[in-house]
Image 1: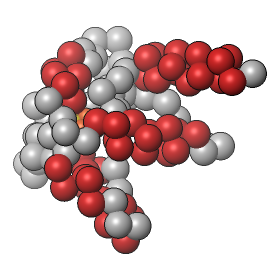
Image 2: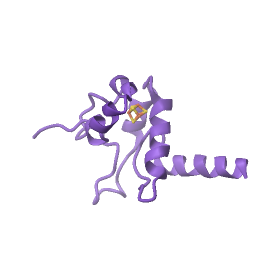
Image 3: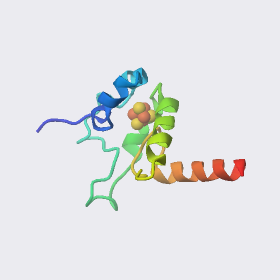
Image 4: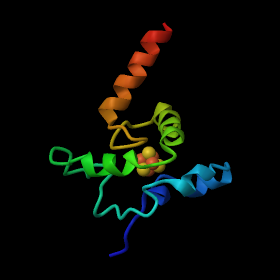
Length: 105
Ligand code: SF4
């Protein structure tokens, strides 16, 4: 079976055309997504453990850029908030955005 790596999954082709070179430094770049899952599968949401993915993020030199990308991508009208992205779980991202909105209101 071919392994899938997340920069490919999250649109590296689009990113490179925008000059998002930070993706080349992503700690998850060479992670085998069959081994470390950044998203729960459709049938696995209840048993999915985000900790292995969060561990990868914790050593990532481009976490801030990734977090900004997550905010932009998930902020679109059809953006789904799920999985680990930018060193945060979906719940953490939602709480952070909510706090930011509240602070700026
Ligand atoms: S913060 Fe996490 S998801 Fe984002 S690039 Fe780094 S390792 Fe990948």
